[in-house]
Length: 111
Length: 116
View (spheres, rainbow over the protein chains, first blue to last red):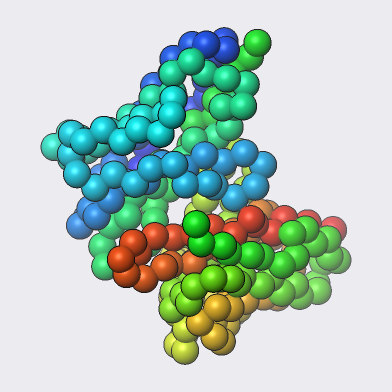
């Protein structure tokens, strides 16, 4: 059974801090790993990672995948209160295009 | 980006009644859509894969007779929760799979179901 584990489960930081969120996986026929941000509604897409070692960046967010060690990290620098959300990691595996989600990391950024 | 809508956004129903939730891809055709359920403070759990023109594929532990899925067209999938009970109260989210070249899933905004 495919498995995706995120850590930490929950995190509280001060505005301006840098955070690193972790995602490890055990799946059969890995295709890609995706990061989503979920506030009150459905997840919004952040990154899709397919190749090892290539960092993807979008503003203050960046992510990288290590296919040898089977994990990915999501970095957020200079955090803002608007970054408060649940960050979900999901892995696309097999031919059926099904996503397996991790439990998520709840990030709270305080003033 | 692609747009997926869900209707209704929020529904409250009485125990024993059935509720239908619609998922539409507004600007692309989706032969495959997915239905997820999310309980409070938990992650998304895939319930079923909906394929246009054929039967849905349900994940282990999901009752196909309780959660009826119909993917009648390339832009519409419906999930009907039959004989709803309070334990069915949850956030239901659909996603639509876009074809080549991206094969990305686009999520709808979700439907919050409360069964009283």
